[in-house]
Image 1 (cartoon, rainbow, N blue to C red):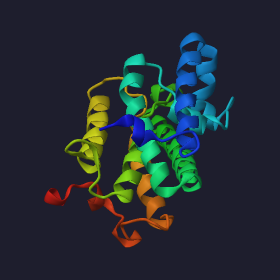
Image 2 (image 1 turned 45 degrees about the vertical axis):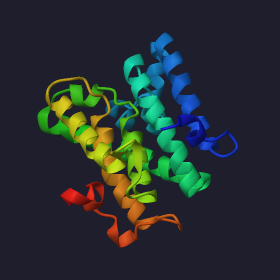
Image 3 (image 1 turned 135 degrees about the vertical axis):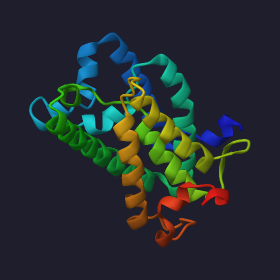
Length: 222
């Protein structure tokens, strides 16, 4: 896979460039200021009670606090975003990412509140949510619909990567690892499917009636 020709330029993929720069800036500033980091992450207590910052429903999906996960996720994020933007145009991509990211953030916050009500465990209410996981799932799904049999790297189809990533994130969370974006990952998967079913771009390869869970599976295991 050649990244350079695949990414495009600022003129051809402006949303990709803007989001990639934002992710890098959020990481650098957040690593040097806990005050700044607290203003961009999602926190159910703040979302439902006080000190709520509207931008956090977007910025929480673009912030990584770990250099290791950033180095792993950012190249994938940039490549997928550029490919989607070139497939479905800038305006559609911007609207898709904004609506899905904001909706999944609110849904995740609501789920956390219900978990707190059901368990009275304050970790659900005050635990920060952030990470690129949710928006990666959104981008993977969009690329699956743009190119159903598309390949991310050599023989790895988008569909072969997506579900194992979602499942691995969920299992790591159950195993006790601190996965800050597990709810964002799961809710983004569902919200993306719903959004694409009713707001498909004009040049979508798959018909809207075919956008359901089985589209996530490779042909051999459907």
